[in-house]
Length: 304
Image (cartoon, rainbow, N blue to C red; front, side, top):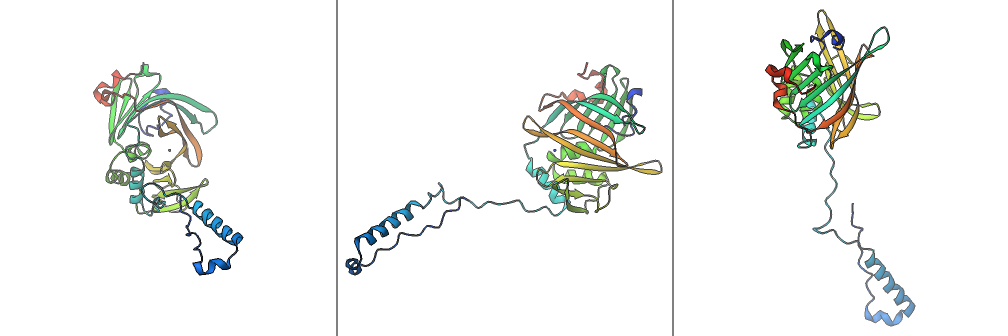
């Protein structure tokens, strides 16, 4: 998972900044009064009786407990709060608690060519993510703990800054923490929760929070209306005198132990690919020791 554009990294890493509707039953045709029977021929009577039997046979059996309940659909989402609440409700108790994976990175150079690297990551939902730059012998990486990011170079802590990781929040935490907490963190990321719309994006209904039509640079996030999984995040940050918008595309989800996990994320800047991360050896709900997120024990990480 993308760590941060402004953190320190070892030299080789510095450029690397998911009816039965009962058929109406009609009672058998009523037999004519006895006074009319003599007027009817036997073939006619036989036909009437056969029709009566057939009508009874067509009556479907009623399901145990009465007729089936009518199919109900979720009410449409009409604002940002409803969306966050619906995302939480959909996966309540159905989201992973921990995740580990090897991240294969591709950095696309502006002048052409690519640089590749690997990171080992450990996630504990909510709010914690450990990224170790490989080879791990350098003991360099970053640690996200709630709203703070810590940077380590050669085993030494270099700095600590306030920072909510937008991908960690929208790719995992939103499905596990109270909606009010999510909304507060989204607000702190500069996402305008008053802006909400529905669009057709890449052939699917998608909810957009934080930006009007045509705005591709304001901080915003996009969610599939069907799966309620995030599919796009745009983060706008100020770097000196300029504003930089980073566009993250959640290109692929995979089922990992019964949980939907984003396994490919593409980052774009100025409309061109900048960085791609692909996850391998992904494991959900495995043991992730609490010590991995203890800043005083960074060098005791499990990666050899």
